[in-house]
Image (cartoon, rainbow, N blue to C red; front, side, top):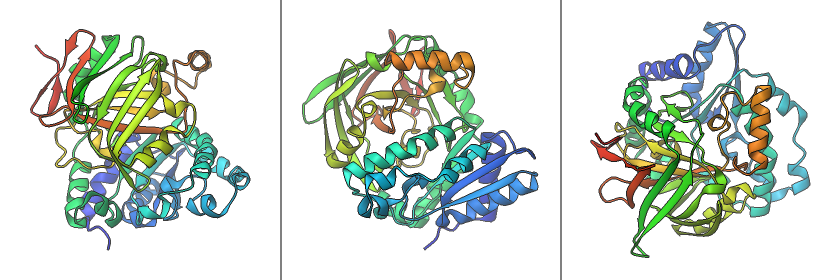
Length: 397
């Protein structure tokens, strides 16, 4: 069963992705559009618009058993060897290097096809795919989510209901977020520390997580990387993260649900962890590599227009009145304005060697709900405790 989306909604959605998120298409652009065939209604509209704008559309159709179009799909982890996984074809790298812009459409026909993979092979697959992830992230890119029955099932929703939520959020003008996020952006840009207070219902005590963000660059998200959008984020000094946190909102990862996450972090390293649901999946994430034992992001969700809290990270992390941290890779743009410049590369390399920047094949956002009934209790930027009004973070007057 396929999602029913009107031609008008597909047209508006595609226009936002191309003209807002990617700042338009020119004759010099080679735009990779990557997604499963089930996402074809949106892929098709994007492709036509790119050609009409004189650009080249490189349509990269992903196999249903491949999670997000990695260099290999699930079968190689089940029947192949690590040596086979490491033999990435040369043309794959050339294809990624030749594109100038990148659109990834998340949406799976059957997420169970790539869940519960052998741990050692999955680590090797993540490592083999990391160079291509780095190429993608070095160019203008945008992620969006297409409604599928497989993802609707994971949310416990009908496809029609799920489609209404996804399309409704994906056809709203993202420019409206700019003003909503401005005061939080300004305060975070001037702040040196973050303190997150949460409460673990099992432990029946308040937990505190602290980190240093001094000197970091802050990003205000208005649909230029994720669509729909709505967050203000930065990457901390990975060495500085210290304390404990309980993360209550469920997230989906490779077809599995993780919920009720507890982390204890010492000198920037995750020393203890647990989950009420999906512990084995969380364990695989954290044990991927050295960097997946550390954090790479801290952010505030700023979109109060989300109709429903979904498990998919692209949506749950944007919900107004939530906050999230990411297990794994840091964002280069949080440390230097131009990571690809000669000076930027030198600074970034130096910060990486010092452990301030965290490098990992993983970047998994986990989300705490600070609204009434959630596990979040207090969020501080330096000595300012943020408030929530109308399901949105605000700086107190």
